Image (cartoon, rainbow, N blue to C red; front, side):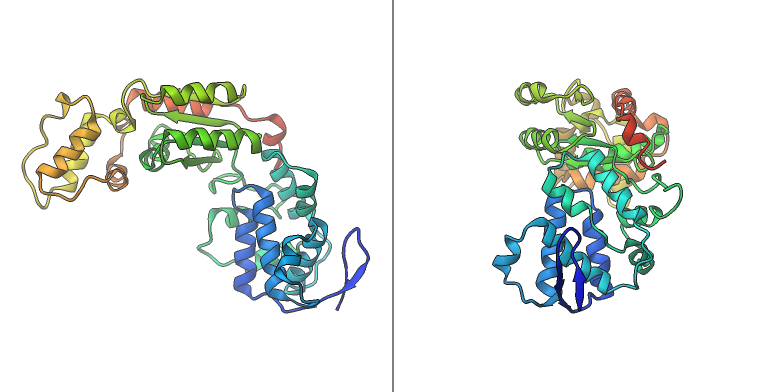
Length: 338
C-alpha cells in the first residue's frame, strides 16, 4: 500500500496490522511519564521491526533511521490497524502541548511528537481497568479534558530516598485534604540519598516542572551537591531529625504494631519513647517478637492501613505537605488543558 510520509515523498509499505493488544500497549508506553525521546523511539522501532513487512528494515537500519522517517513508518503502521481517521488530531496536539510544557526537548524529539497517530480511534479500544495514564488519555478528546483523579498530567515531582515516603505521603496528604492524584503529584523513590542527587541532576536537565526533594537528616553532603542545581521553583526539605520513620507519631506506630501482631502476641508495645531512632526500635521489636525481618516496605503498608485521622499525621509531615502544595507551577502549564 502507498503511504504519504509527512514532509517526505510518497513511498510503499506492506504492513502487518497491529493486534488490539499491541495497540493498547503502544498507547500505554507512549503516554507514561517518561522522557519523550526514549519512549517514542523505543515504541516506534518495535513497531517497524515487528509490523513492517516490506521494505524489510534490518534492525541496524531501524536503529539509525532519522526521526522523521521513524515516525512516519510507525504512525502509518498504527493507523493501518485502525479505522480511517476523520482528520481530528486534537488529542495529538494536547499530548504535544503537554510534553513540551513538561520536558526540555530538542528539535529531533519534536518530530516524534508531531505525529498523526489516530488516537481518536485508538482510545475506543481501551478496556476498563487500564493504568491512570490511559484513563487520562481518554479524556483528551473532550472539550475540557479532565486533569483530575488520574495523577495525569504530572505537574510536580516528589523526589525522596525510600519506599516508606512513596507509600505513606499520599495517604497522609489525603488525610490533610491534599489529594496527590488530583494535583498531578508524581513520587519517585530513588533508593538512597546518593541516588537522589543523580535523579535530581537528571530532572533539572530534562524537566520544566517543580521538583520537591525530601532528604533524611544525615544527608548533609548530598545537600551541598543539590543546592547549586536548585531552580527558583524547586524546593528542598531536610528532615529535622533522623529518617522518615522518625516522623511517624508514636501512637500510630503502636496502633500499627498492635494491629500487625494481634493474632500472635498480646504483649503491649512498650519502650518506643526511649529510642532516638524509630527504625532501630522497629528492627528490635520484630526481632524480639520472633517475627520475620523488619522490612520498611511491608511496615509502611501496614501503617497505611492504620492511618485514619489527622492525629496520625505529625507536625513535620503536615509541614512537608504544605510546602509541596505551595510549590507554584508555570502559568502556561496550568492553562494547558483549558
